[in-house]
Image (cartoon, rainbow over all chains, first blue to last red; front, side, top):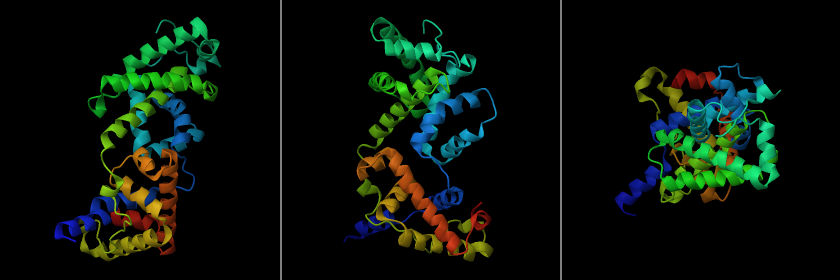
Length: 100
Length: 205
């Protein structure tokens, strides 16, 4: 194994300090009842509308908030959703609340 | 958008087939073509063909999953959640398609148990920091499956879950659960070694 290759193998196996700190933060913030991405997606629209109007987040939706803090992919998608909603809040849809 | 529809009217039109369905789909298509490019701006240049493909795929999924819509939000908000996921998934796929997992993560990744993750925090707490990392490294090696180790380390290297899943042959949702189960094991491993959340905070925040 060349020295360059050996150094590369070592790099691949190791985490750097920043990654190690992120792992410790992830582990420290891990909860026993986290939802996964599909459950987050199922509740994301309702959560976004509540946040958009500054409403108090119902207890049932707080796990969405926690998932968004732990999952960068879902957080990115939530950001795209919020940009779209801020640009055009009603978008041709009556609100679900108005229909009740 | 030609008119304001209630959620029930959206669903009814899309289920009706024929002209009502075509009109509703056209309204959704125009809305998404207007909304998506702006909403995706912060993620860099987005190719037109990506937006067109995402809009088309979104409309197909909306028709396919209409029964999943429970009416807890505006219908269009629900539609955008589908479009946002499809768009970001495709953007990430294009950005990562040429990076192999093998090039990023060793077959059997390990945590360097003697690495001080925060050497500037002061020598007085160095022993505690290193003890925590050492316990974490032990739990990482003893408690996690190879797939859990690969998923967690790949995430820490910034690889998106879809790409990890593609390489492991599982869904993004399954990748999240795989890494989540791994994190829980690591947390329990640290607790078994006498380190709780307060110890982590004291050393690393």
